Amino acid sequence: MAHVEGHAHTAGHSHAAPEEHHVEGQQHPLGVYFKIWGLLFVLSAASYAVDYFHVQGYLRWGLILVFMMLKAGLIVAVFMHMMWERLAMVYAILVPPLLLLVFVAIGAFEADYTFLTRGTFFGPPAQAAPAAPKHK
Amino acid sequence: MTQTALASTSHAGQLKEGLPGIVADWSSDQRAFKNVPWGKAMMWIFLLSDTFIFGSFLISYMTVRMSTQTPWPNPSEVFALVIGGQSIPLILIAIMTFVLISSSGTMVLAVNYGYRKDRKMTVIFLILTAMLGATFVGMQAFEWSKLIFEEGVRPWGNPMGAAQFGASFFMITGFHGTHVSIGVIFLIIVAIKVGRGDLDHQRPGFMTGRRGTYEIVETMGLYWHFVDLVWVFIFAVFYLW
Image (cartoon, rainbow over all chains, first blue to last red; front, side):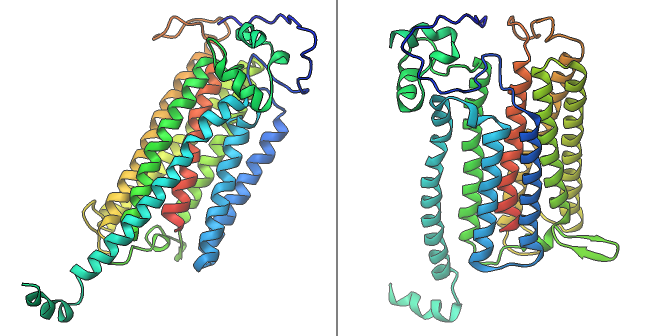
């Protein structure tokens, strides 16, 4: 695990972009963090404002989800240093959670079905009572 | 290919970028995750599994909430606090959000000072992070007791609306609060290790023979930011929805 810092330059493979990879770890100027920190505060305040001013309907959903994704993206990209990692790791970590979207879709279908079933089963007794003997 | 195989000791300039880089990294011997200490890669993989746990919780909550015939209690009112004779909606949750974001900011500073081997500043920011985390847990305890003792919310029912509200709330925020509490304990442990110079002198930890390095501060940081990340989703879909 000792990080050997010797550059065995194989000539001809110097097309690597100028980047700030450190074998030692992630070192970045503090200014980046302060900017993101401030941005996270602003975004949180904005999403709280959505509730405070009683924004309703699709606008509410849209704003909440946009602020949520922006905050999540900033935390993962900058605070967790994902934007400076190699793509092999970025994809290994960020692609699998997309499967959750499939679960969300399945859950939504299931919930709609349950909702309908409950509507029929627990429905107004005036309608449910006469219908029951018919099926016997 | 040969040069990537040789590059198991990671010479930054030698690694390929883009899609060829992904292929080369994954097909190379020994290590797929270049330039990353294995402890950090393992933390990421743990966090990925944790993502699925919280994902399952939030999706179950969505399913349950969408399928109730009785209206869901309005979180904006349930979590309102009366301050100075005025009822302010969701104010406690908003403060908790800001506390957690602040703790993420102090954590990132701790990681940064750690890599600069600035022992004193690292300890200060680690302790600050732990204190903010403990504040968060304290506010959550206040929120729980208010809900349980004053509002009468139970996992099987509540006076405000759909019975499933309690179960979802206690499961999701309880699991998140547990994560924060564990994080606070680990922050204190890491702060002690940094403070007494374990990492500077590369002393091994009590459960491992591996030498201590400042990388563990970053690994700790990943966990802490993840806790903040989960709260972003809980805040949006549970409290604001």
